[in-house]
Length: 393
Ligand SMILES: NC(=O)C1=CN([C@@H]2O[C@H](COP(=O)(O)OP(=O)(O)OC[C@H]3O[C@@H](n4cnc5c(N)ncnc54)[C@H](OP(=O)(O)O)[C@@H]3O)[C@@H](O)[C@H]2O)C=CC1
Ligand SMILES: CC(=O)[C@@H](O)[C@H](O)COP(=O)(O)O
Ligand SMILES: [Mn+2]
Image (cartoon, rainbow, N blue to C red; front, side, top):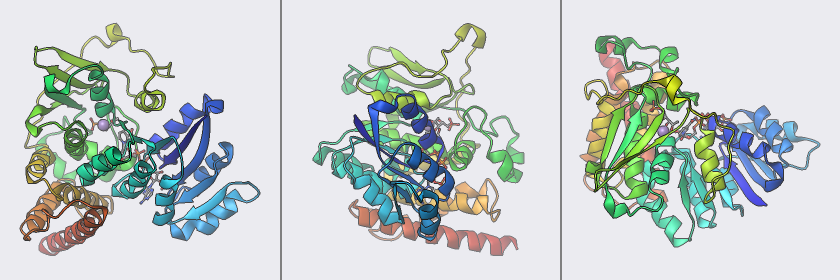
């Protein structure tokens, strides 16, 4: 039986993972499930799957979790430390599906105990790529990509020599506003930004798709995971989101991964790896689809993509700064304090301010230094937003 832990079990990726496990219950033993504020879901799933422990990241919700689990054998715990401990529990396979940089410490803990880490949480590699890859190597642990584009690249590379790769093309839906006139974007509402044209995902990644910050994170994620040169990584707008990525080789061949908008494919691939097993995913009817479209992204519409290129040039802790500034700018957009287009301005300003501080971004990448820069970047983003608000009244 495969021992499984799901970090972020109550979210979109977490629930899709549980859906797959539910279909083959006897093959899995659930060790730990973690969540945040959705205590009812967390407790229900922990009891259904007989988890050893259920953990909420929210200290203030421990009593609620205990109450929801009462009468069952599932233990309850709360707080960021308890989430990291959940990652450290002996398990064979750990799904990293917390949203944001909060996913980094439990993911590292899972690698340190030698588990296979199924990585949906792209922020882990953006904030601390070299540290994460080195931790996996040191402990003989494997990382399997779950982000659909990275799973696609991984699958296209099976049996191939990475040295023969010339280019990797990551597709992007273009997000909620891909066909809007540019001058309307400043007024885009939270509700409009929270609707994805193709995928059903958590709210934060959905808004990041609209701003293309999701793709910016994914370009950095690809660089860290596959060890590519930034110049080898391209982004292509593909409104249908059916081709997830393409890998181009030195002989001119371009291998594409094509599949429906269903994350159970990438999750199931990582769950069954190195085998392929049947998954409850619809077969594509390409004759009915008829046509697939591609176009180059417009840099004026998507400044996040240019920022990602700058971050890859800067190296060091710039990924941690970029991610934290983006997370905080997104918090401010969700809270209605800044507009949709202000998010990239905030991130650009935080990167400029912190990279001007001597030696700050060039420090070694450890969990401590990443955490410190993450906090600093969030405070800096708050200050930038406050200054903007004062200026605009
Ligand atoms: N959804 C998708 O299809 C895809 C997602 N990803 C990536 O996977 C990750 C998860 O995305 P998604 O499932 O959409 O997100 P959701 O918002 O749906 O779920 C996030 C999960 O993280 C928990 N959580 C939130 N904040 C914290 C915190 N501070 N500490 C610990 N746990 C926390 C949530 O708990 P609760 O809800 O109980 O508060 C929930 O379980 C992200 O990194 C995303 O970029 C990548 C590719 C596709
Ligand atoms: C399903 C998945 O992997 C998401 O990251 C997806 O790529 C989001 O769509 P966008 O292409 O719009 O960012
Ligand atoms: Mn993706």
